[in-house]
Length: 593
Picture 1 (cartoon, rainbow, N blue to C red):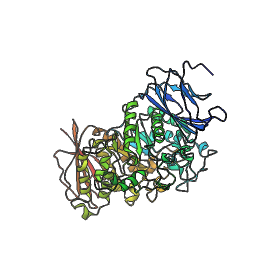
Picture 2: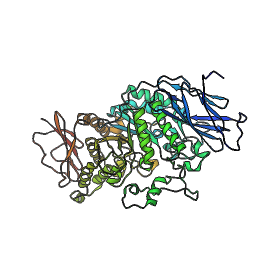
Picture 3: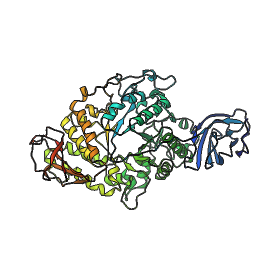
Picture 4: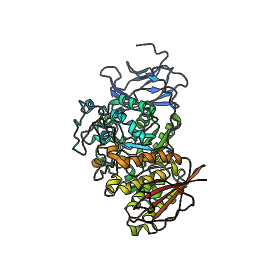
């Protein structure tokens, strides 16, 4: 044993247990390493093994053990280590009984996180379905789900991180400034592992995506291309094959009923915000499982909470993350979210955090965002996904001509949604989209009408918020019937195929032009809207140099209209730009002032 200097140690005693080294093992330590000068004074370790009812030590030059708790008859130890300030040794000097455990204290990377703002455009990718850049990792020995089958909607198809890396030039050409990747951590599940949301190891990128090294390589190349890394994290649940679930040392680490049964969520967001709610409804929402394969984590439990907090901070540092999308944000415990976001802000100034909130009412969505509503809990996130805007956009393009003339239908639905921005502290930070990995593609939902898609993309890029383009929308993908179909394979999935203009045509050109054009106003102007009249939607942005006006014919008829300002010239059209507006045509006019 090397000299640790004067060790600081904790002696753990439990009645009926005999201390000693016989049979003592350490299977893993989470996190596997840490960094110096992270900003947090306390590092929390989970040590998994056997016969851990023993002495724990760390090098006193590195820190001091403040607390140890044992679970599962010595199978899991939860340590709180208060780290010293300033320069630390390169090793924590962790001792478990007579076992010396490697635990590096690395120097931090020099990396300034830029976060996200309205000037950004995100490109959203489901990695298993985007591109297969390395055929050798399609099958990984020892994993529960074996093989690939591109004909099966819920099987793995073989996409990986190398495939994304090969297509960064295409992503950049769309005007994207950030890449949001659905979860890439290990999903060692027997079936449906392709989607990534049943994580079984929070410290290992799935080997079928190429492992940790492949993500390192991708992030490095993204940085060279000026693309930000948006990671998808899951606090609410883990996969049923997660080691902490397989060897559940304390049943209260996940949510069960008093009878030990699995409670399923009612998915009612409003039960958290409703002043008339029954507590049973809000509890069922927050503590219910999504599915039997994804146990719902009790974030009030010290072990569960420590694991998720440390894993998230480790991931953000390890893989140079600029922004976090937090899956099922509203399902998580508010006190956990507040602490998580506070620690992230301490460690990573500039990191942008937005939560997925699939809400059906404006108040329930705003409740989970930075808002102007008195009496709501503030969890410290920067924004949420704007599902209510998404819903109003689909209502606009799905309405009949008669409904477009209604007071609050069609164009009126979008008008009233934007008027509800009064509830948000920073509506320009909301994450906007036409479709995503959970909802049917816009083009498929609107019966393949490319005129509507071109118009809707023009509208999306003009609206306030941070827009998201779901992979393949620029090439006209239409899958919408099921989750497997929504996450269809990107064209050229296993080929060195770079000339996407042969598939995307005018739609691809429109996405590229809009991606370039929105740089003129995004983040440089506030959005204003005119009250809708007779199915016309008119929006305006004014920068220091120009005024931009979007005019949308929200009907299936050819029509003309009077422009709201004199001396305006046509800058962009989703249609032909001739005297009469074609059905659903959106135009952007500009004038210098």
